[in-house]
Image (cartoon, rainbow, N blue to C red; front, side):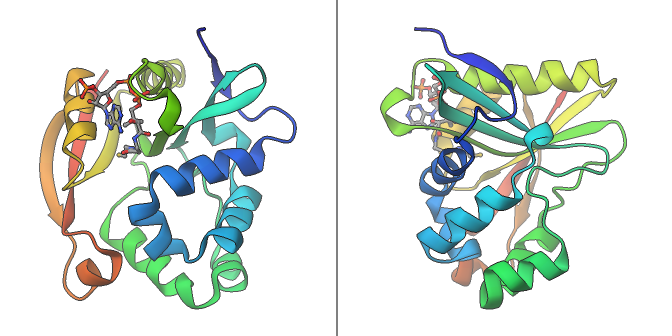
Length: 193
Ligand SMILES: CC(C)(COP(=O)(O)OP(=O)(O)OC[C@H]1O[C@@H](n2cnc3c(N)ncnc32)[C@H](O)[C@@H]1OP(=O)(O)O)[C@@H](O)C(=O)NCCC(=O)NCCS
């Protein structure tokens, strides 16, 4: 069955989108945002419907693509939200945010997170979400899509290369943050539209 792909969440599915992101990207989300229940609630609260593309099957979210462009980011977190909702984890969120430039420059759209539920991977849903992000960028008059992929995520890297992205550079995460977050660094990829 082909999923519907579009901006925003069906009613009641916001938390499910947060769970898919957290569980699929646990390697990064857990060290950055902390333990699951609290992190999922906080992520759900701050997800922006106009910066989140979802894939839905029978009204349920099965894939999520968080984008940012212009002034809006898919996780709409101010400094005050960070400390209130993530307390001690806030400094990790800020650190990772400062190393990886996920704010979009003029003319570009950044794919900040992309995840599909494990039981439906390998069926083209991730590809549909990524193409929807590119189509949305074009519609908004943008000329580039940019994203980071973790150094050790070779399958995802291959997936992006197949979707016409090219590696622009490798961005290391300096010690001791690399150990804290468990990530040596990430490739920055771009696709010109
Ligand atoms: C990467 C991801 C979004 C792709 O979604 P998808 O619906 O499986 O993608 P498609 O079916 O369109 O394409 C399949 C390709 O995705 C890539 N892929 C990456 N991780 C995969 C996984 N765990 N299972 C299946 N495919 C995966 C592979 O390149 C795969 O092609 P291959 O089977 O030839 O290796 C999805 O696998 C996922 O959520 N992975 C975990 C989270 C993640 O790594 N996100 C990317 C972070 S930058």
